[in-house]
Image (cartoon, rainbow, N blue to C red; front, side, top):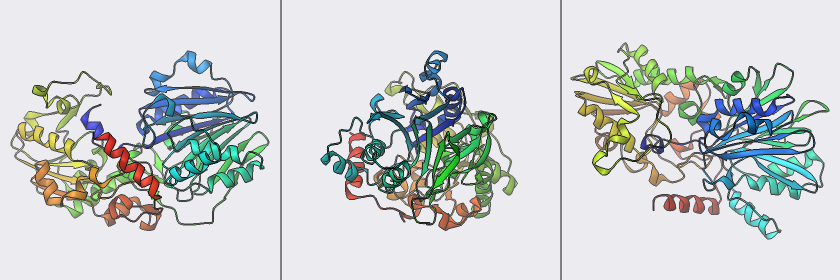
Length: 475
């Protein structure tokens, strides 16, 4: 994988469910295609024809995993799909989703986005009671809890299962004749509902998936809501948890979500543009032009340019035909990783003072290489503005930095980061400016990666396991 991708924050997963449509699996496929940015390691779809649940999943991108032939082998009018980037559990085909099990002649499938911060303790308790786990994912805990509660009426089983969980989870479940959507009471991860032209429903992580299949957005699944889609009647809702404040992950707006999506009721494109506008107010810099590193900084760069009056240029050009893997260069070609994806426009950069707009700095290695390339191309001054505050604290809710040791801002001051990357100046958007750009209140968001205030603290076993995974990854 390119250093460019590995050194950015990587996402958790994407979900798409289709209820009551004759081409459910095919629509789920297109929905996952729209959500590919949320996970590129694996993809899967489980479809139900009223009697059996049919499953196909594999490692790889959506168009590589599925074909016309595999989709024909997924009959039924209900389907749930999943794209994955592993944040808990190894990156193996065993850990791909959806998961499907049969218990007491009932088939149940689950797909999950987020991290359960009490999953280690729950798993140990279930194993003591005789549960046998087939994967290393926290998502499998949901299946075992549902199996334990199988003798209860569905509403009670769902309530008892999900109130035992702590952390971030937007989930889809599939049973004979039913599709169930669940969102944790903090609402960390997005989940929305749309109506299909034939009267059926789509549930997806982002509205861009609803748009692609020609659906009509209805509403978000509310934090703490369980929505049951059944043949018997219109979708009905349960609210097993007491009412509480939401804690939306603000990184969805900063980085993760597609700009054409509405997340938490806010258009992502507009929010990112406002981030740039506020940055121009907070960080006034004299320069010849503003430029993004495509594509992550594009929209904030538009806002910064328009608000500051400094022209916007594309100082580097992205190669859109670079795959996820390529033949690795030798040590003598050490700069190849940078140039293969983004190449500077030398005639534009020569003797110019430039402002680079980026959405985040996580580890700093990618920025350092890119700035070096701009210096080599002849840029006279290089300033960088970041459309979020310094990321100083680990995330336990589904983003792949579970340790402060992976975060450059946890180890260095802003001035030290600027020197390390090779900048003339570095400016971050303030936390107040970031929240202002969303139009919501500070209390609506989880800001833990910036301020260290965690809505839900992970249990000690989870934290210890996360640190162990970090150590293993860097060996």
